[in-house]
Amino acid sequence: MKNLVFMNSFQKLIDPRIDRKKLYPLQEILLVALATLLCGGETYDDMRLFGVSKLAMFKTLMPFKNGIPSRHTFERVFELLNPKEFQQCFFEWVHSLKITCPEIKKVEVLAVDGKTLRGSAKPSRGVKPLHIVEVWATRNRLVLGNCTVDEKSNEITAIPKVLRLLSLEGSIVTIDAMGCQVAIAQQIIDQRGDFIIALKGNQGLLHKDVKRMFDENAHYIIKNISIDHHSTIDKNRGRTTTREYSFCSQVDWLKKRHPKWSMINSVGCVKSVSIIKGKQTEEIRYYISSLKENVQLFAHAVRAHWGVENSLHYVLDVTFGEDFSNIRNRNAAENVAIVRRMGVNLLESSKKYLPQKISKKGMRLKAGWDDEYLKRVLTQDF
Image 1 (cartoon, rainbow, N blue to C red):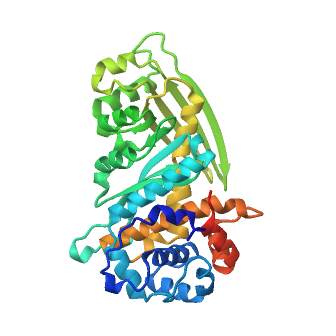
Image 2: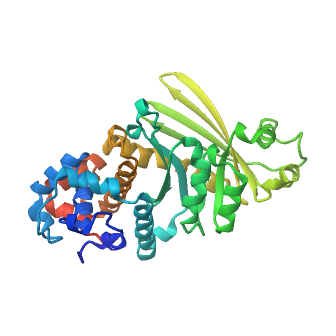
Image 3: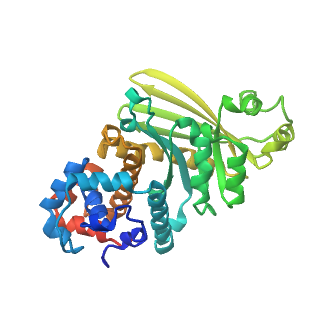
């Protein structure tokens, strides 16, 4: 297993099976499951079929003395594995990437967002779908961590947990309005990071004050205030979007009115106007931030935040078919979700082995067809 660098962080994962039923080593089961999901498989039957088809290749990586386990073994293992222990191993793996890969140290924006595993619900039994809060490194395009909760409303409790396990120094953490909480903002500052958090009606008077400031150009609130502006125009597939960014770091008046938000150093506003087939739509969003200056940096971070939707959630749903997964056992659904995110990280970092740009779907197909490429994806040391 010396070539499987990523497996080093998962060696201490406790095997929940009793000794007499450990015919197939846990590390081999995880390897086959990961490779199956990487190459387009989705179910336990797929894991069995893919393992049997690629057994010769797998034997170059691990012994596989007893061959490939049955689909029931895959199912039993993922249902018995402790998700919290598996998540901790995932965190340690990502942390090792941050230590060994110089590029990870240059992360600017860490986007925090939630995603619902719709297929994990059991409506007939009143079981709601799992909801995953995850951190996406927008520049390096890697999942840095995640935490699973039972409902979207529980993001408020999950965000501090997932952030606590990460090094935030030198990074800007971006969060949507659900995470606009004093404790979360203060935690980011305490961990030596900066934040940009969306501001909506859930913060009542704070939202009204910031909205009125930009609506009235601040003249009725404070004299001689300075607001910086920046604009961008994006054209894509018949859609033209103009974004106007406004940014102000003169917020002493705001902190006096809202003393519990003493960590705020600036506020921002983004006005987006989109034109599609001649029809115009407009949206205005407001933000609080710990940044002290630079409207361009504010604009970059706000725009980069949506990478978690476009580069991660879209890939998981459309390319990996996560929304269609019918794994409903809670432990198994959470554990397999972690394996998918391992796959996303491995695919993202394996682009350097490709002579030309290929879609995620194409990369998965190539991994399934080309054993040498699959081995390079699995054995890369970043």
